[in-house]
Image 1: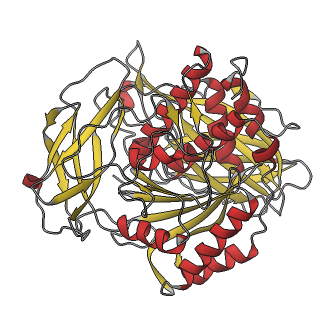
Image 2: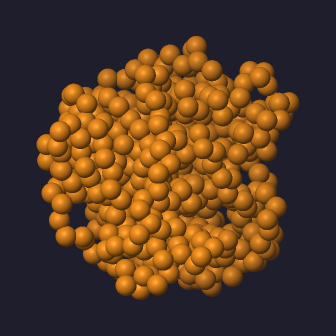
Length: 520
């Protein structure tokens, strides 16, 4: 354990910004005059939180319980009953955009940052074994992402093509986890949490449930007792931010640890239902409210159950565990409620779902009552990571037109006004503020340059109705140094943290066109 002189905030930026890069933030608002290119719709942020719970219900034999109704569910928060305001059965969920059906998406993570090389080889082999047992057309859209010492990147975007995933695994050359041996523990913890936050941000626009299957030892366990208060508070803030981001994105985590010996990633709080099962469950029949699982120990083993999933370890049948995790997240119910016992006191709010006798409900254990606002450094990390990786970000719909001339790209970003957060100004106008990351990449996707701009769109109240269906248009100039073949623009809403991204080849920038209409 490192001493209290380590400052969490100072560890974040060196992890993710290349040493040769300088993050330049230009606080230059867009022209506040109103034109057809600066539309808006007022969607002010509310202090009320809608809590959506995706719930897997099984009988005592482990079979999914179908044909349940809203009246079968009783939800409690901190011991107080909550009124369910919406309910979805297993066949009533919205369609996802990658398969146009109700199947939830699956996100496979190869954790090469925290996992010993031999153990990671075992995990890869078991994943290959699992995929080979699947039909050529997978039941769920699946993406494959790797996290290592330097970055996290998409090996295969969402697909139902089993062979495409197998080919991506075959072509991926794993890196030796140098940080595991010589790195700073808090660096790996920070990298892992930021990766989870990025996955949440990238999937925000995908409706319904997402299942993350984390293959690897997971971020290092840390005991918070005895840490210097500023470091302890910073870690707690990032844990709470991660938990709430996963809740908002409706992500359930299943962690599968390939390590076949006792490991530092294990939490002292771990229990098992059966000594041969080695699974860390969360919800059991008639269970009591679970207190904050991160009060003393921070570990990935606790994150799975906290989000409604499971954590597996000390197993040699990982292919079956992956299959079980995918199957577990395939059918579920969704209930939603607005907490009746509102409070401004920061705390972990425990959730319990009760059903009739003989049924078991598994969902997330709770969330944090207050969303900790990110520091400026954390916002920079959010935008820089989204700009540097190849994930699609769906939290803000963004399109682009423009042209390249004389070593510059002159682009206009069109952002769906309905997706932005509009804040009232003293004079009655409304303002939406975004941060835009601009990455310049080579033909081989090597990052050559990067910067950040802060921009704002201000709309007078009298134009709300006239511009209701017109997207916000922000004009951005990007310098094109030698070797740049691709641009990636990331737009982050400063209020919600939702992000959108658009990629464009510098030789094929869509020409300026009439302003697209925003569909309601």
